[in-house]
Length: 367
Ligand SMILES: Nc1nc2c(ncn2[C@@H]2O[C@H](COP(=O)(O)OP(=O)(O)OP(=O)(O)O)[C@@H](O)[C@H]2O)c(=O)[nH]1
Ligand SMILES: [Mg+2]
Image (cartoon, rainbow, N blue to C red; front, side, top):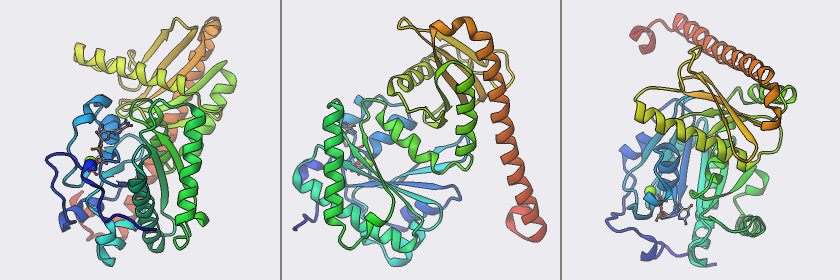
């Protein structure tokens, strides 16, 4: 099979200068202890649009006129664990890096998110699959624990059947290409996404959950809340990105999650206008909310911290039992706060032990 060396001009934004990887970009990709999610893919596949939609709350339409990225950019998810999401420009081909640079980039707690423009032509598609397999092989040779996630992106409003077919097709393309990268032996996850609906939030939520050490504890707390509270679904949400760290163990209903996103956006909007945080801090009287929709659903909200909230969706027919639901929500919040505090204490104890053993380390002298 022949692969183009570069995508054609139609895939290149105006004002775009091709960049060679430089040491600053490499440093920017690694100079952090936080788990790293590397967003990679060909030019114009949609990496910057995704990160702008999720982390800068840009409307999807704002991405239409984006120039291609010239440098590596970093975004942070800062609530539970700090996770760095790194936008690697499509022109920065990780394949061109030296072995030592690749070792730096792919070592540690790293996940590769490879974004493929599912609507591109056959040539771009082949090039994309080829690049995915090459990068994955390099990364897995260096770090067999690396996570590989593929976003089959820009599937906006097609039917579920069509999206499922496209996903299967891409899985087959990767298998065909995979003769030497052994990807089939590794766990590669595929997600169908678009910035024009909540599919991109669902995909990134599932990806970051794999990096949250307490994810299983959160899920079991949320599930036991759900079992006792006559609710449809409950989410633990990062309020800035609206990604969820955990949900109950019932299959996700995108309509409920979309509701959560809209409610959170509405609170943001009110906060901007009133110039105060109506979401409040833990324990504050303003840290709960309740809204009843026309379609017979009710959404209740409670803050866990200024950055994290619990969103619970239930039927309005259960409103008579709301005092019980509210009591359970308060108990759930308390358990979550305790889990988070315990984690912080463990981390502090670990750091203190480290400082005692290494009194001259820069961290201990700085404190
Ligand atoms: N239809 C559709 N278009 C999208 C979607 N996501 C991104 N795009 C469009 O794809 C184009 C390229 O997006 P970018 O985010 O600049 O792509 P990139 O991967 O960052 O490109 P480089 O910076 O060159 O690597 C833009 O015109 C976006 O509007 C999507 O979900 N659906
Ligand atoms: Mg970009």
